[in-house]
Amino acid sequence: MGAVLGLCSAAQLACCCGSAACSLCCSACPSCANSTSTRLMYAVMLLLVMIAACITLAPGLQNELKKVPFCENSTSVPIPGDLKVDCNNAVGYLAVYRICFAACLFFVLMALITIGVKSSKDPRAGIQNGFWGIKYLLVIGGIIGAFFIPEGQFASTWMVFGMIGGFCFIVIQLILIIDFAHTWAETWVSNYEESQSRGWYAALLCAMLTCFALALTGVVLLYVFYTKSSGCDLSKFFISFNLILVLIASGISILPSVQERQPRSGLLQSSVVSLYVIYLTWSALTNASAACNGITGGQEKEPTYWSSFDKQSIIGLVIWACSVLYSSIRTASSSSKITMSEHILAKEGSGEGGDGGEAGRSGDEPKVFDNEGEGVAYSWTFFHVVFALATLYIMMTLTNWYNPRSELSKENMASMWIKITSSWLCVGLYIWTLVAPALFPNREFN
Image 1 (cartoon, rainbow, N blue to C red):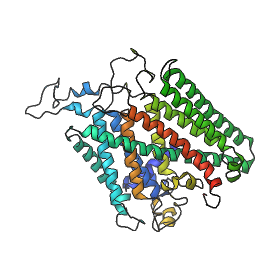
Image 2 (cartoon, rainbow, N blue to C red):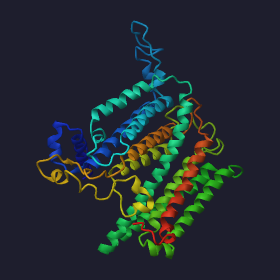
Image 3 (cartoon, helix red, strand yellow):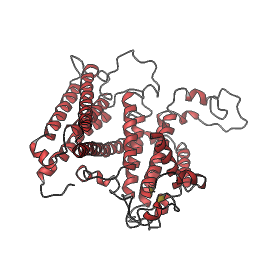
Image 4 (tube, rainbow, N blue to C red):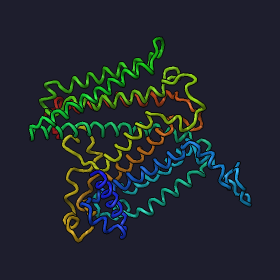
């Protein structure tokens, strides 16, 4: 089933590009709203940028580049002439900065172009929903051009933008995760209420207990590996304080006043939020003081870019990819207003209205139909701003949040505070979604 959906998604993306060779594949796939297919295409573009950035960190790549004839210090037969390129710039953290710099500028440019677009009848809609070949060539050309930027203050300056943009995307990611938790719980509770099946009740219980068990295990491991009996007081404070916060949030979620306003809120959402908060705490502690960040002396060999790409970075990439895809295919639900994700997700039911909707569902018309003739399903400008921030976040995640020309040390107090602050903000946003209906009973949140 998953493979079939994947093939259909690929075919729908090809249809968006207008490829005649894919017409047979498109005819076998379900209808796809233009607003969804466009967001998926940009998500694919962002994922490819991430893959390209990861390749520059691959172990052994620097040695392989020495075999290229036109590289400086090449071990192969040199090419005639004076054309020599420093291929060391094509690997490492600085290469990640340059790749993400070009991708970020592309999304900023798209955000500026689509300012004020109200419907697909706007002439700029063609730029948003089409010209994919030109867009990919533009991004590739921008990446190539970025490698010719003089180093100078580029890395240190762009790192500041990266840390600010990365923090902003963490906030957006928090909103998406909280929306996912509410939507997940609402769907399963609704299924249980409609069917009265004990299977749904057991699934709810198992999911909740699993998330809480993982969160509790994470807390124990943080105390074991990131604290010492003497010292590491700041790390102990972060772990203990965040544990208290998630316990308070879980208690608030089952208060009678909260249940009265939101009968489907409960411990499942709290368990998901708790698990994410513990992950953020772990991520923050990896950038704490070198004596307390879980790395013991002599444990690592000579540091490399790839060796510094650790488990929490991999988990961060997975969460990032899921957030990008979730924001691309998810539509706003009844809980999106209270979680503030309605500003990020497309409007609910947007795939069924607008010009071309009936034509898109007929057998003789393209499967990708225009559903934004009467109004856009999402803010195009804000969508591109989010993706620009996502590019900065992936840049900082791949480089472990420190300067690309610094030594490969885990310690980075600035990034530690950014991550730990985001964990507190996560709990605050979740508590807000619980207490807001009770504090403002006259306001409509659904």
